[in-house]
Image 1 (cartoon, rainbow, N blue to C red):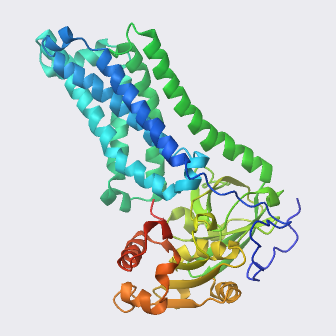
Image 2 (cartoon, rainbow, N blue to C red):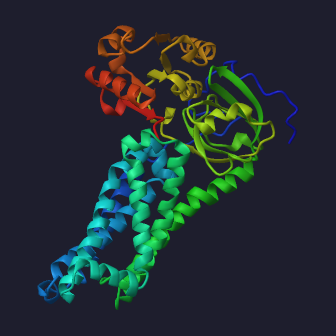
Image 3 (cartoon, helix red, strand yellow):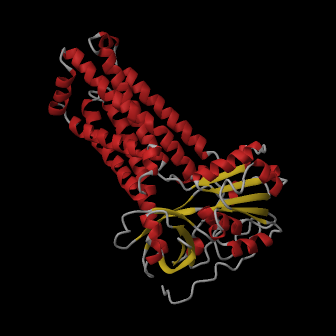
Length: 467
């Protein structure tokens, strides 16, 4: 593929597509399966019930009455439940396409974080209760029993190391710690969660009361682990690898958009077959020294114009700050497209699109992807005019739809974005679908305002860039 041809002018607005007509240049993404999250939730619930039943059925009344029996039984129950919830956490971030397309990756990450404290607490309780129960049974001290576990029981030392890694990952997920860590550090720490699970699995089969002498239970538990590992391997590794090789993306241009903001234009093969919607993002991995080992999420800032793609990045960390120096010809490894912030989730033909800072990037691509007959107003929020990215492009796209671009420039104290201000800017906001994208604080402020105006949740769509 030659990269000598000058990339297209993405700033030139194109006519919106007709409803149901994908056009010759690009394959359109199908509507998400809205039933997929409910089906997945039902399967997770059934699985938890089966795990709890497994723990209960393997405990006899006589064992409960023995010294330390209740503590040991509770420890076994908590260990199984905590491990199962860890597997669920992995599935939440496994990029399972039907669930991710219907829910969105930011919401799945939110559920992943909310769930995180439970398996950690259950696994810590498991270690304490089982040690306590065995110590009571042997009439020995906790310290002696813990040392006996580490020295004499198969694979327990590896499991303790795994639990330590999980505790470290949990500590770095606390909001206070996460906000003070570089994304790169946080990402590497969380990779060790996979190692932690691998270290903990053997001791369960070797020592678990529910599995010793129960081959069917061992087989079922092994299948659950293998299925989880398979989903992660397929959708986090194999599918992205195949997609990256198929499209063969390379960097062909790097353009300054604003102070600290650059657009990367890349070219590839067969991009007309890439089913991506405006508003979605990819995980991008630049295959060059110092960058190849980490992937970062960046949104498309325009629809593909085969053989070209454009995405836009603000320098918020070490990785993004390096992008203005990325040499042309650098190969790209991609995961995605991801995100439910798309035209397919709208419920009406009247929209309000709201973007703040680099959150304007997916707004611009989403606006370009709306079918004919859909009208849209846009609100841009920034502390200065330089923060209002792609203003000429947005003006052109909005004018095609007879809408208006509103700008709110200044600090939160100087320029209000409350319910009263919104009602004045867009008097018919209650009849519109509202798309909101920006930093977490802005999103929460704006969501509060639209809820005060009485918009139902089904008409409000939002995406956050917080990791």
